[in-house]
Image 1 (tube, rainbow, N blue to C red):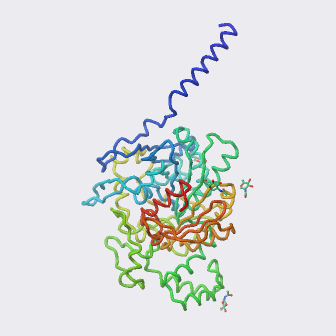
Image 2: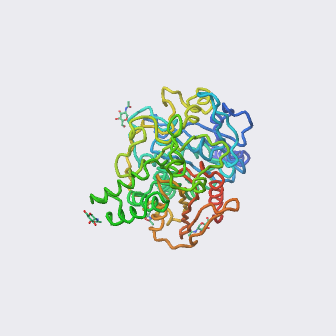
Image 3: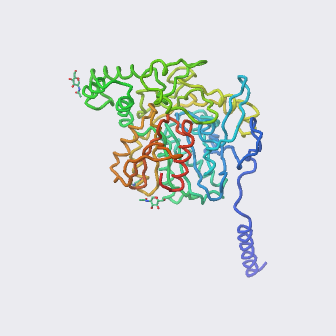
Length: 499
Ligand SMILES: *[C@@H]1O[C@H](CO)[C@@H](O)[C@H](O)[C@H]1NC(C)=O
Ligand SMILES: *[C@@H]1O[C@H](CO)[C@@H](O)[C@H](O)[C@H]1NC(C)=O
Ligand SMILES: *[C@@H]1O[C@H](CO)[C@@H](O)[C@H](O)[C@H]1NC(C)=O
Ligand SMILES: *[C@@H]1O[C@H](CO)[C@@H](O)[C@H](O)[C@H]1NC(C)=O
């Protein structure tokens, strides 16, 4: 071929390539990730489901597991949301199974048998494409061939999750132009802002593929040692769990600061507060505490709360499968401090967690046929599935989340900080206080918000598109307790509609 015809040949090739690209829709979700059937579910999937691994470190063989549910509405236009549960050490199957996934799980009649799956009318996949990510490696179905990776922290976790996202969008390029949000709850109050910050930095640096980040959501999120620590006393007083007298005393002795007080009489009063609230389920003060195999009837015999108040906490979820709340954050008065963060099994020196029953999830995800259907790697690599694992050693090494929130929101990304207002683990009083502390101008003054014609909670809107919102009568995991309200706040926020 001479020079000219070579050029023509090349031009034709490029032209053909462009033509093919424009004719074939960018539809390239990996075939082998498609889930074709799920044990326990006999119906038709309302949308496509995919699952599999993304390798975030080739040398170490570090692989993060995701379960991706396409939107049941308009997958090509609806937002893509990354969902993260907390812990640290808890699998995002918590969100999938117990909170806002496409299925409600009906517990099997006989112990150890597989649960039955039914469609969830409040699934977040009704309005969004949603990625459930197990993070960091060592949690849920994610793993590393080099176990030194199981010692980790905020920074490495955020960096790995960012790598995951970049690679995930390479696998699913058809979703790259959709609006993208990051969401999570509890200890994901650390995962979400640190990861969002990584994504923003990546966008600034022009790292490809460019993610179409729009904002983030945090539910009952761990945020700042001091704010979180100071939230409990005003919360338990406001909820009628300690007396006015004790409240006055503890306030005076501690000088209004319950964080790191060295004052001995302050410590004595705080111990009295702890004593008063000791028997409660910290994830929802209205719920009984589950003591395997039967719940000890604490709230009904000892609670000072009237029955109508207690009913606030009842879920309308059609198939409530968790007898009681699972613990996936901090025991009382153990706020997240800089340095090593104990996981639940490490804290308690056992595998059982107070007030919990996670039988359905554990049975389902340790069944060989389920694991095969979901493309989970073999057990010799991943280990058995635990809702919250003690396999990892985790360092909180990014300090307070407040500077992250300030930085991201000031860049124009939207934020929704929501709180189930009966959670004593990460009480709304802390989230309300730290959002206020940013000193952003109030643009939507404290008011009720509505769901199904009822007051569903309260909200205050700030400049920079930062919104604080409570969900009335909800515990720690809002979509579990209040699925309809959670669905409403979620879909309105994603759509940029008033809450
Ligand atoms: C695991 O990773 C650590 C840290 O990078 C490295 O020192 C070690 O050699 C690795 N082990 C194996 C078996 O590759
Ligand atoms: C500290 O303790 C003393 C009593 O030992 C008390 O009088 C004082 O007010 C306490 N509180 C503060 C904030 O200093
Ligand atoms: C946010 O963080 C980036 C990266 O560290 C920094 O360059 C920028 O100045 C920060 N912006 C604000 C408003 O704090
Ligand atoms: C808030 O979000 C809306 C909707 O996405 C956007 O139009 C607006 O510019 C944002 N405002 C600020 C102050 O970033």
